Length: 131
Image (cartoon, rainbow, N blue to C red; front, side, top):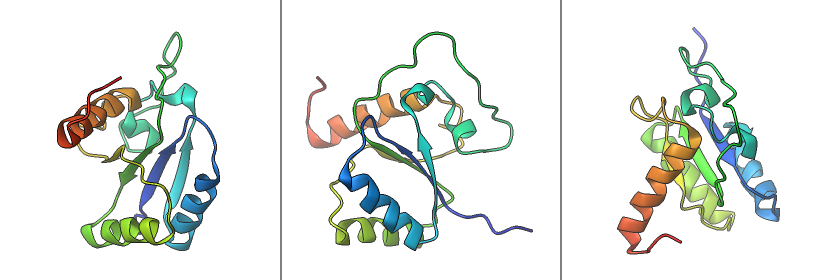
């Protein structure tokens, strides 16, 4: 049986120098990276993560815009997650508040739906109001 490796779905609306640093940390840790393009925001999280039972589907019309970077993590245990977060801090990568784990519950959501949910949770936790 193949060993399941951790995967990070990385979405960014525009490239920056921090992207290279982030990807360097992930590569050094042996974590797979899948870059998610802006036109993929209407695809299911489970399909983007390559989970069985979720096929990638092209939605009709324009994909909704996600205006900020997002990390969606799959296959992480608690120890590897803490190691990743610590490594990102140590590398001085600017914080990416929009982070989530792929769960049974959110795998059927589109990336945009997941973004809306974690944006709402982030605003509740920090007391910020949406734009």
